[in-house]
Length: 255
Ligand SMILES: NC(=O)c1ccc[n+]([C@@H]2O[C@H](COP(=O)([O-])OP(=O)(O)OC[C@H]3O[C@@H](n4cnc5c(N)ncnc54)[C@H](O)[C@@H]3O)[C@@H](O)[C@H]2O)c1
Image 1 (tube, helix red, strand yellow):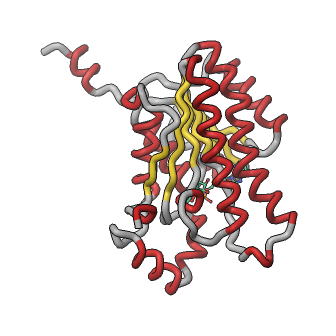
Image 2 (tube, rainbow, N blue to C red; image 1 turned 120 degrees about the vertical axis):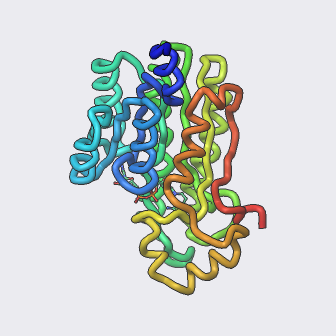
């Protein structure tokens, strides 16, 4: 029996890769952190929630928890410097951290708008701004930005919708800017996924019934279902895919 071949067969899709996952300590990000580790990556779970970071860091030697507020330039500078010093490169960036709000337009003020745009929109842009130069040095890299179905079809949520629309736009812009450097940039558009973020929404039976009624698959999504789609885009399986938009919404946006 050739055991070295056996080892090769068992290799994951991200063996030896260094990945940064923002918001990597909860919900979709937490599920993704575990999936990436299972697939052989070392994951820098970058999150603002220190308690959740401490918890997830104990789960594997290949999960490194680092505190990051995605909306702060100096935080990104420090994080990228630290990762470069420790690992020498960054192969994958998942801009996943995000916040939400359900205010109708007539209740939105500048502070609400700024809060959503700063974290969801500017935070994604900063991730690309500080990680892409490291990827450019190696002439390879894969970035996946987590937008939302609300950036593709009307679903209320106003400032949130606008912030996720900016994630959609910056993904295309970055894909065109960095393609010649071997960097792929793609975006995913989850529908309603069962995570701490949607717990509030799930408590409203009426809202849940409405969404289910409008979703061809007739149910909400699970974090791991988003994770598997992100894994595909992040991995070399998607080596000729850049600037793509992938809906992970049970068919909601097809209605
Ligand atoms: N759950 C859904 O239905 C859904 C649908 C579409 C898109 N999304 C998007 O998916 C992403 C993940 O959402 P989730 O449902 O897992 O939510 P979640 O609340 O479970 O996780 C979000 C994570 O982001 C972190 N975070 C928040 N602000 C941050 C900041 N300033 N800096 C760094 N980290 C920060 C939180 O601490 C948390 O760990 C978000 O971008 C969200 O907008 C979620």
